[in-house]
Image 1 (tube, helix red, strand yellow):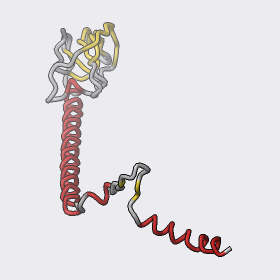
Image 2 (cartoon, helix red, strand yellow):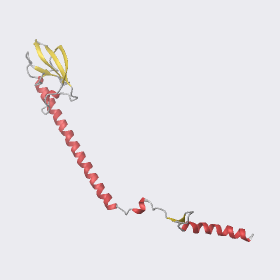
Image 3 (tube, helix red, strand yellow):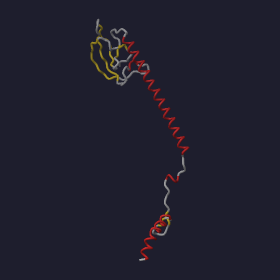
Image 4 (cartoon, helix red, strand yellow):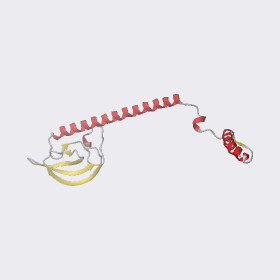
Length: 164
């Protein structure tokens, strides 16, 4: 009975002692546990802060570039709108090339008192409305859309589109 009491008392002590000693494999060699990645690397707090500062600076630069690009697009849009509005007031005579804000292009065929006949040539593939009135754009590619349209002329403005 004394042996049982001692073994019940000694077993927990042996278990605690085993946890604090190095692990041994069955072949008698000593195994060491690998420390975790957090334990092996020195603290890089200063490096992390400088990387964060660099990332923050890059984000600010990217944001500023995006704002400048947006401002340039808005300026280009205002210029296109102003030129379109100005060219709407120009006289449309036979043979004049005219364009819509939605990028259709044609030539004036007939002019009557309150209406104009336009031979529609095509439409620009650009998604930017008023592309024919942009100072920065060249000659956009056109899709052919032939046909004649009678209109009051209020949505067709004189333009410099090159019809091919």
